Image 1 (cartoon, rainbow, N blue to C red):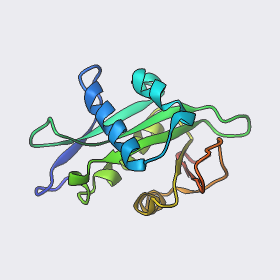
Image 2 (cartoon, helix red, strand yellow):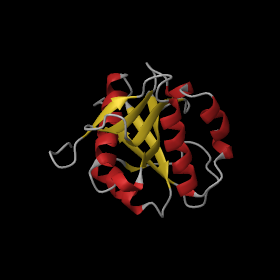
Image 3 (cartoon, one colour):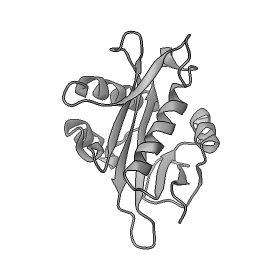
Image 4 (cartoon, helix red, strand yellow):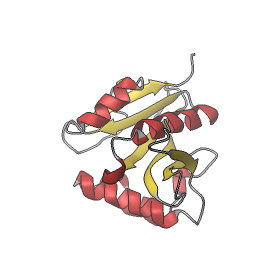
Length: 171
């Protein structure tokens, strides 16, 4: 997903060096979303980073400009998910965000592909996510990367929440 014209790379976040960049991405995402995420424990999530996103069960990835090596273009995270009996070993993709000035360069797709790969490497069988109906570009991206609609795996009070899943390993 890197071209000579738009070079970027995806790398794991470094702790504590990348903490402020991660917080900035997460905060910008929540501001853009314009929804109250207190039902997800968002304030605690931000205060305890990396928290559930810590390796080896989780991951937090950054897209960075390959030329400057400092400019963060976006982020994505994955965390383990406890969703009850009958489900495969599952994880959840969270906080996919690309700064507006970096959009249109394939950064989101690269982040999704890398976080899926990290989840597979961690031994997960299924990746879940939730999104909102107004996030059409995200829904299109997830669908093109093999995610399909699924039943709710937790209660999200935001109206019309769409739940999606991707099988990571053949059973």
